[in-house]
Amino acid sequence: MSSLLTRQLFPPYCQRERAKEQDHHRTVEKGHGRVEVRSIRTTTALNSYLNWPGVQQVCEVTRERTIKGKKSFEVVYYITSLSPSKANAEDLLAMIRNHWGVIENGLHYLRDTLYEEDKSTIRTGHSAQNLAALRNTTLNIMRNLKVTAFAKTLREFSRQPLRLVHYL
Image (cartoon, rainbow, N blue to C red):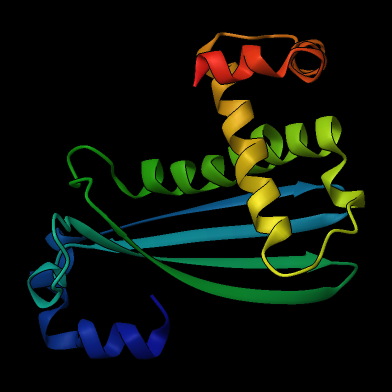
């Protein structure tokens, strides 16, 4: 955890006592002209202080990215219902990393390639959010139907909209 937070939560006199409640992991990735260092610290020591149903661990993830000599630093906190026996620090860091990859590569990629969402100029009121919700609904229906050819199925739904309503 950040040094200030670490000193507050885990002062030197109780470091050994709290060691059983902590876990940490660090990864370094190099590629595409950048170096990314991700580290995670997890603890169960804060569970009793949180009014959060099912909390099992609190995590602090730090991300340090260096691109062409310029560094950026980010700290993010997570609460999880996974116990340390179900997900240690290494597992949690991988889950967090994969979660964003799934969103970016799974949902966003499909929405952009099928609907060209990034090129959309719809900005009035809540219309962009409403269209995104409808697009997500359509994609989820297609996933439930085990569709592999999304573009082809979307064209079929466009020609026969009642077919889509039938699945709702």
